[in-house]
Amino acid sequence: MPLLETHALTASYGDFQALFGIDISLEEGETLAIIGANGAGKTTLMRSLSGVLKNEPGSIGYRGEAIGALAAPDVMSRGIAMVPEGRRLFPSLSVEENLLIGSYGRKATGPWTLESIYALFPILKERRRNPATALSGGQQQMVAIGRALMSNPDVLLCDEISLGLAPVVVRDIYAAFPRIRETGAAIIIVEQDIAQALKVSNRVYCMMEGRITLSGEPCDLDRDAIHKAYFGAD
Ligand code: ATP
Image (tube, rainbow, N blue to C red; front, side):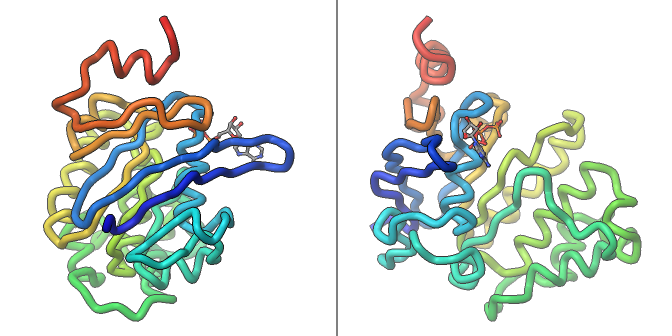
């Protein structure tokens, strides 16, 4: 049985339907990438998985439990943590306070503590007393990732962590992923940069207009198939 799976998952904003019957699965320790153009529904899928959007109870399974109707704190307390699009740090709090907030709401021991987050992203230790807003975009993204890790999650959901960051900064952030994977966590990343997505993941799903249009292992996907799944028919 997969660690996390969706069954014909749908989602709507009022009358507007954003997801149409999504079936995905995530195995223990796997890194999945979800790619797709603007508006394909990637963020909506992440919000559904993290409980920010409520779903039909049976539409999401986690360790055999139907979690689709759970609220975000209850999803988080079971070990699914989200790095949201736009980071959503608490601007008036320090880096360290932002990190500590991530550990509230889940009583789990594991590899992630303030010290191990600081070892992963040493710049955050130097900046730990600064307000989060005093940091660069890349450093803020490190705080957002660190905050999610502080709950010692079994599943880490990362929504567009490279958005708006310089390539060299993106490289520094993705350099942390092998260490995160080593702890056994499964990861889902939403990524608009297809090359980056193929590089870091074991498996990729492509979305278009609220549907999965392609899935497979990076080595099995050719450029034409990805292009078609991403943009539609030529
Ligand atoms: P992006 O890369 O731009 O974040 P995405 O693939 O993450 O795109 P979503 O943000 O999930 O896509 O949006 C899917 C669809 O739902 C889009 O058509 C979007 O306009 C719509 N949508 C998203 N959020 C809302 C909302 N709060 N209210 C109404 N419609 C929304």
